Image 1 (cartoon, rainbow, N blue to C red):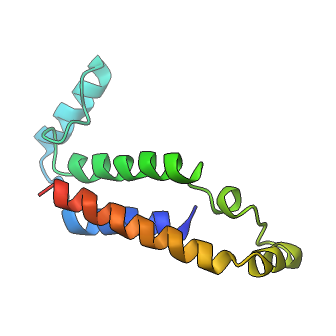
Image 2: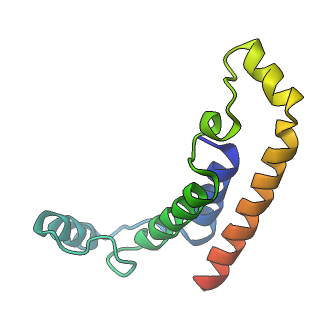
Length: 115
C-alpha cells in the first residue's frame, strides 16, 4: 500500500478517531448491519466518522492515482534490483513526493470539512 496514502489515513484517525466504549452502541451497530440498516453513519458510534473520512480519502486516492497499491502506481517491483533501478532512474522519488504533498492537502481539506 502506498505510504503516502497510509499516512493520510493514519493522520485522519489520529485527529478525529475515537474509541467506542459503549457495548450498547456497538450492539446497535451490529444489529443495523444484520438488518441491512445504515450501520456506518457517523452518528452510530464514535469511530464511524474517522472510518468514513478514511474511506473518502481512499475514493479520492483511487480516482487520482488509479490504485492504492505502490506497485500499481510506480510500476516498479521493489523486491528486485531491476525494479529499484527503474524507480530511481525514472525519478520516482519526485513523483512520490508530489503524491505525498497532494495527500497531505487532501487530508487537510477533509479535516477542515469535518470540524
